[in-house]
Image (cartoon, rainbow, N blue to C red):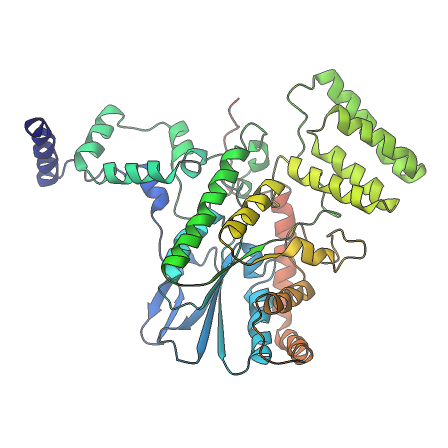
Length: 466
């Protein structure tokens, strides 16, 4: 056995000495596991700053390299909701959290570091957790769940692979002999293989491209794999934080249910063309009945969703009718069905909410549910445009309320009657921002709405394969 294994050892040594296999790219799993640092040290300023090569997805943020004894440092990680889109960090809930903490606990110096990345999903946040545990954090607050499907079709093989498989690939690709043999067997990977297995260093969301919405199909979503991997990523975040003794809080983000139709609906797989046309005609009739005979629209819409429970827009229309006749519980259930059946899931699904709750419960961790929280601030308990500016992003007021809720839920206050002073500072902070900031945010909101509707202007994507 030793003699046989020595052949491989000699072959590997020869490859290293001659440089064979050096120029061969590593496998997809190692490429996926690789991550650039989010922060770089500015020695002259004595602080860490978001690296220049990460600024396309992250806003400018910094914190002192040397942490004073009285400082309490919180890292916020998540997607664009954390960053404060469609505006930016100055009106994010992280900024309002830092302002409020100065009143809730003035004995400490608070530093809230915003690590919100545009379109960042849990698998891209995980390397950031591994990085940021080395910056002396006192607390991680991780808000994630909306972005899990943005890259899933193209990179499903990478995302759904088990950690053992990824580690095995990493070990094998460390061997020059393995990389050389892979290159000999298949010297030029096909485009289709690249589409499936190569994950770039930064986000490459489907909707960033022309034709991106067309790529979304029920068959391509890999919903079960995404939910399983989401759980795995969250649990690994927990393990990293526990290994470094850093407390962790999860935040479940909110979705606009009442004022956000599904971004893409698709008929069920067994619905033939004739039935599809009949349902389309019935939906048009139901839309007219909502104006002329509101209560009469409900039986028709119920029959439509029974006929094809997979068509998301039917559920949304049913929710609207229920809501308009004040049948709120039934309306909310229908809206949730519409969100979960959406073929372009830009909002956190019920399956992902359950995984986040499961990880928090199994690890006895705090979980702040923003959906439930924002329901209490809506007139009928259905989250809509009154608290969110689009399908997922909170308004200025909602970001302020989220900050106050986090302080209450996490018991971070050390004095009473601090909220009034914090809210006065919120107003002063908003007034200190110039008009260009608000104009830029409104432009970004229009761009986000076009993006969510599938009007991305990036390079076209190939049509999805059957």
